[in-house]
Length: 308
Image 1: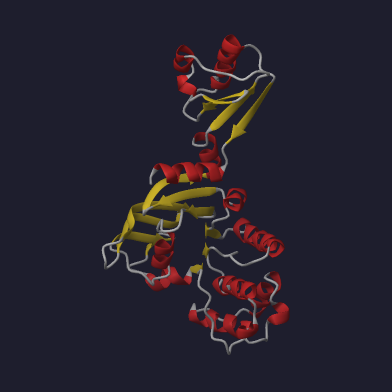
Image 2 (image 1 turned 60 degrees about the vertical axis):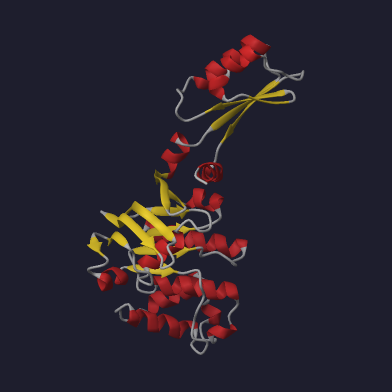
């Protein structure tokens, strides 16, 4: 069962801008899924389609196995969406907002759960203030509470920690982890790639409306992330034309006393040993050797630049 599945999802706006190009995405139930992409990649369009504020041009969206175009109410009742935009009636209090939204989702207000949300999102002492009195960070946390008030099975977080301080952000993620471990599927968009790598077990990268890759985070970092080996020598180096050919498969780079060789995911596990033996044969023993492994941010930048 997938919490969310899109098939050939496309969106072309009135002036011809194609925001999504036949995107087929599968978000496993129970996953903590990062949807990444640079500005203009199509992330917001996809989330607005899920929120039913944008109509797709073609394709299918399924939420927990139900077609969203056929069964929109059923799907919405099982989703909670935290948008980027903050908008509340300034005359309601956080407590009233959560009560009202429980009803909008077709659920009776659960007082214990509402109190839990206000407490965990550190809004309890502000529960009876008008929302216009809340700071920007408090309003963002209220958006999260609002999306969770009906205990959805799928939560979509669109840049939820923008404007939230570091310490509070950590506590928010602790809460999200607890919900995920209890079975809630979480789909996250964020520009904090280090945060996404730490939190998420699945990842997809969009660029210019196209899905570049999608899969498990550990598989991505194992199979797609590149690796560079840095050999340090006592003297400056130069590669002859012959040596350039010998080392060509490692994309050699010279930086003063350093020789940098790329050992990428598609090469065999012995590629580091091969590289070291070649270097030793041509230049002797290095003074120092270090390995630089790409992280999610490196892979993201490489993939999106490649497709520009």
